[in-house]
Amino acid sequence: MSILGIDLGTAGCKAVAFSADGRFLAGARREYSTIHTPEGWAELDSHEVWARVREVIAEAAAQTRHDPISALSISSMGEAVVPVTRDRQLLSRSILCTDPRGAEYAAALERDLGQEAFYRINPNILGPQFSLPKLMWLRQHDPTLFRKADYFLLWGDVVAFMLGCDAVATNSLANRTLLFDLVKNDWSEPLLAWSGIERGRLGRVEPGGAVVGTVCAGMAGELGLPPGVRVVTGGHDQCCNALGSGCVEAGKAVCGIGTFECITPTYSALPDSRQLLAERLNVEHHVLPGLYVSFLFNQACALTKWFRDTFAAADAPADGGDVYALLNREIPSEPTRILTLPHFVPPIWPQCIGDSGGVILGLSANTTRGEILKSIMEGETFYFVDSLRALRDLGIDTREFIATGGGAKSDAWLQIKADIFGVPFVRPRITEGSPLGAAMLAGLATGVYRSAAEAVSVFVKPDRRFEPDARRHAIYQERAALHRQLYPTLRPILRELGGRQ
Image (cartoon, rainbow, N blue to C red):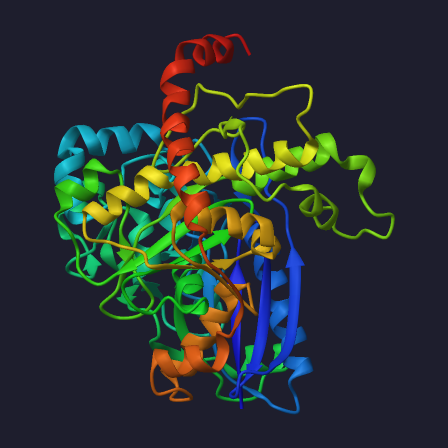
């Protein structure tokens, strides 16, 4: 009896299967491409994504015939919805959060309701990236398609629906639509009324970890799954990542270091909404009951990739090996005397700065390549310092960070973060927390594990713990104060330069 976790991202999907005692049994991965149109739109081909999902499930099923899959759950990106019919037909492409369409509807919602009043219902900062603005754009610009759709489902829930389950909306994903009431844990009647979107077209709300059906016989046969595989609701990918990294109680946070670096603190009590709004913190349900998460993120690995491609392309191993293994050996142990403003890619959350640029300050003729790389790692980490301080002021503390994602493989980077934040960083043996968290939910919902703590004890094993160095932390506190002055001081120049590009 094995369990399967499926993870859908904007660039690809994966499936991983584990035995009940935590052994890795199977894994499969597929990629798909974002469709960029001349109008500047960003979409996914829904049929292609569903085809790739079926492939990874079938591949995992074929590798687990000796220990057949009994339950599965799905982690997915947020915001992007798919129009579907009752007879499980995918009607169109899926509009991604990075697509610019719908900005006028987000602005209208803010004008009519006000950000503060809206935030008390759905604690998100209004913007075009969410589902509702896209749906309203679709209703105006493609009314035939809009009328034809029986449901508008988010991707994790699309997979459950296509496998044969009822139309549901997992609460952490539903929060990304802007139509969800966080406290009531259900669709918001005032927001539905304002938008004109019918409740019945969004699916019934379910928490993460709920059994919502079984894979239908025809689909099970196509995918090579045994009869009766139970389908369990998962959640937003970062919420599943929190479970898969062991953040199952207040006071811990996962630091997922990928193309985006996302810090996800876990807490059990909601502070005053006005305080949360003042810090521009979004809030949504954890995949476990009674817990909440927020997201702080920047594009950390986009910066290190730029460094690699610009300064170390010639050092890439001929066998396709990781050039970072070489670069990490060049990183000095002490804090650098270089300050890097990590606005090479515009900051997104909680800072939203579109007219800045990257700065590396303090170079000399003796500066080494390793020092520049370390200053980039320091700079993107300084980005989070003030937000974490604000969280502490709100009573949302983080006594430990669990590091996941590709960037977690860098010992140097994790030590930098521990030294800057002044708290330990722990790297687990399995650093792909989102599909693991989905698999753990499948086990929890079907009685394989009696509690989240038991599931964590089975799956989340420490690989290495990085303790903060008190002396370096003191130095970094001084550097953080200097770093805080960079953007305000250089803003007029950066805006002028940005305006000329």
